[in-house]
Length: 86
Image 1 (cartoon, rainbow, N blue to C red):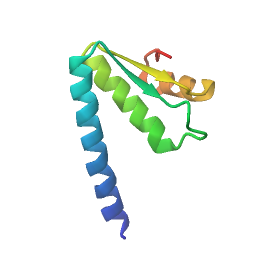
Image 2: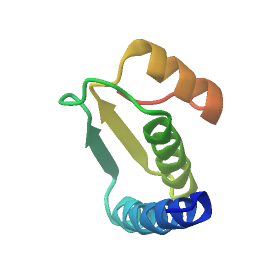
Image 3: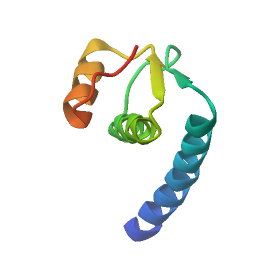
């Protein structure tokens, strides 16, 4: 599988995920992501969390993340310039 194909598949999957996050964020006062069962955080997951946080900000909603290590929380706050709720 070529890298262009992989990127296209990842983008398509991500866009569907973000569409769902956006629609949930529009309907609820908050959205909770529970990562307590994950042992490692891949760079793609951190990017996903940061983008979900931005979508929530657009709708004046709050996303609560559970089970994220302190280092990851600091990285997210740096990338989004927003304090992340945990």
